[in-house]
Image (cartoon, protein in one colour):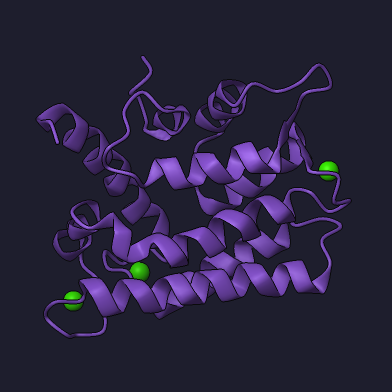
Length: 181
Ligand SMILES: [Ca+2]
Ligand SMILES: [Ca+2]
Ligand SMILES: [Ca+2]
């Protein structure tokens, strides 16, 4: 692993920490994932209950994995320093990440045709906390078709890549503020 590679992943992890800390109190805890889930569901137009439940389950599962793997001082919260260890052993988070990487794009595809229109993509990613210009850049990087849609598979893979420390120059780098400038 090169220093450059690692620093790109650390930059992404730093942004993810601020997103996960949904209530903004400087640590990640169970309440953050409930809040994040409510924000995402609030914009999930047309999604059925099973898809919504899958998203909430994936967030709770992710929290359980995070606190199990990263809460080294055992206070029931994950602070920024503890969170950085996610970059060092991403394989420990693969299953939890994969559930989310399927559940989120599914909310963006309520009609189940495997395609996600830009407005719903932007709404969901805004609910998670990304900045709109970065979301638009990411959607463009995913290579939308002539009708301005991306596939759920491309989005899911984008989510997996985003957390992989061995990836550089990925579409998800568009989400790190200023990185594309
Ligand atoms: Ca918090
Ligand atoms: Ca802790
Ligand atoms: Ca669709």
